[in-house]
Image 1 (tube, rainbow, N blue to C red):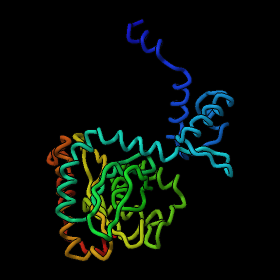
Image 2 (image 1 turned 180 degrees about the horizontal axis):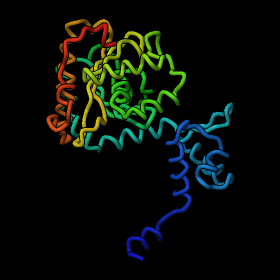
Image 3 (image 1 turned 90 degrees about the horizontal axis):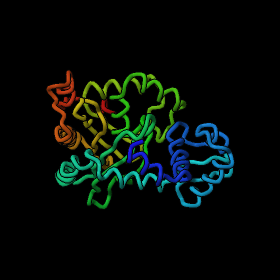
Image 4 (image 1 turned 45 degrees about the horizontal axis):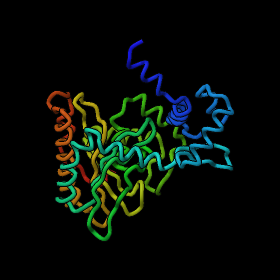
Length: 284
């Protein structure tokens, strides 16, 4: 046995390891479980699972629902994840670009990444200085069928991932009267996003709110996140649409380059990232 293994074994605390094992179980859909289910998933006895769950709940890391008798991860863990993400290469690469984009547009700028197979998470942002603004909390999670960046991330997913989302999220939640909830209509929207290389949210997540987003590629040509400009509908006319489209596509391309991506090396990516003259009514 190596010295590293001996040291790890000597200082390993079994109870902490089991608690982490329980927390990781919540990464599996539907992310909400009772004691029996968690015991089966982790292999812990029901007594062990129950005591650990009660401890994690008391410490604010889990939330207990007395009606459904199930546990879910609390917002405190999302906040910890958001803090951890600030040290990531993505957040560091994006920071100066987000600063400049927010200054140039005067609107809120969001950096949103895929959290898991079914949700996206806001990992950084720059709030607008205007009195009327659209904003999201760092750590906030979003379903993938509404909102500019969430739809973008779903659009650039593998086809089987899209179908799994549609299957597991049926019926698709309607956030506003403009939310796309019909699977075939959503498939068409995702295809249009891939074709033009950017995404629009026109009050499909929140009434009165619009956003435009473009994809961020890693060095392997995989879309790992998106950057968006968000604003009230009253400030998103035809002129703003054209200007912000070019701005957000340029910002996403710059962040991608800072992560080591080269557009010319990915077939179709370069053309997809170029702005196209498409009327707003077709972007929704």
